[in-house]
Length: 330
Length: 276
Image 1 (cartoon, each protein chain N blue to C red):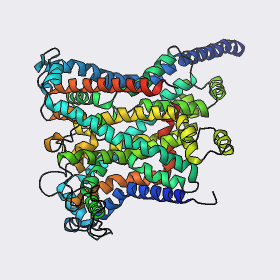
Image 2: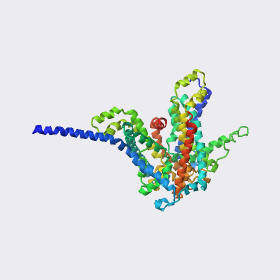
Image 3: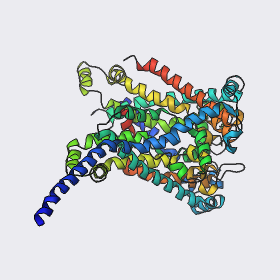
Image 4: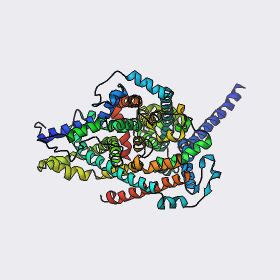
């Protein structure tokens, strides 16, 4: 009997193994799809569906918070309204463009030479210095915008104090810097000053990020290029203009693209600095803020969704243009 | 390098001054947090620590009775988001790095493509979806939608491709390890460094998140720190000392993380940019 038993066991065991192997083979086939499925489930519900829903909303009018059946189909009326009649939307687009340039251009103009200098002249203290420039990037923009609001306040702000002290420097009765620096306290909440203030805060947050990007690109430039140039007697500034800058072009394209995309979505800094209102005459209101206020203050979710799509297309077009101008030359 | 030219010294000074400008707002935040409003509003403003920190915190807790609850919410939401991202991103990254399967490249390209969708585009519909789901004022409204980011999948895929030899996976499979056990017992222990970097990035991102909670949290008790701080802004006299104390509480965890791991954080944040 025992022989029979064992004889029966052997095929049973081998059958079990093959079953396990078959299961494993099946597992191999299905496992990767299971492993990537959480992303797709989450994206379908909280990424794709909201996008489609947003298109639907942008073609309707009414208060969506009570249920979408309370909304009325209006076709492209929301878009036409935005194009033709919504003066605050136009103003917010102009503000966004102004702020994007005023905060974006200095970021790169300063980050590139700064990265070059860090790359060539700093050894031991490099990481500390990079850290100082980078830390604004990871801090809470809400917390730090609030701190900046106090630093920029008219009567007691540190920034006014420093600026007026420079502006009031007197040499033989003249104020040589008076034309460039204010001689009395600036009211930064006024329309003509709120934009420079917001732009400065955004510049402050992102200049270190760009410096790190350029620095990492500089570290990949072959050293023998510089060695050959040094042998030929090229001075450091010549090396900067004839080697570093041309070699940085791909990274410049990439970093500028990120700045365009990021700056056109500017929201948190202007929102906090203007107390969520857009400031006097809405001078500090960006397009993303207009989108938020249209939806959550005025309750017009349809027009707000149309704003979001228009802003999206503007960003897409500008990114494409940037690709045409900077991207294809090399 | 021996002879320091005047221009080089000048450049050192400029870079040093620039670094001080970068750090000055943090300095004033800490100084103001320890002064009364009267001190802050005087000219010149205080430049060294005062003794009013406790009064400012008292004021903060008066104005925001749920402030510690808000701090807890921020930690809770950021930690859950981080844990979910580590799990889901590493699973997806592992699949994309180590399996040959149909549509792999299409799936990967699609995931990367979702990074091009700007967050503001989903702001309004997401708020409505959360309302219809009944998730307003619940933490899951913030951590579920952000539980698996494309950036994290990309980072994990890169790291797993470079750190784990395919033979190791094959060997485990030969020994009869099933697919999930391979991931859990072989892959996870080997990718702890990447977990550290991704964890920091996700935690900081969620901790600083403002637009997300702004549209799904309207109950003061459920606010995260950025929302709570923002609600201090308002009509009348702004309590600068209390605001700076609150801002300091929001920023201190970030400063600690940054000091402990600045190199890893900077590398992690730029790696995606440079390689991708």
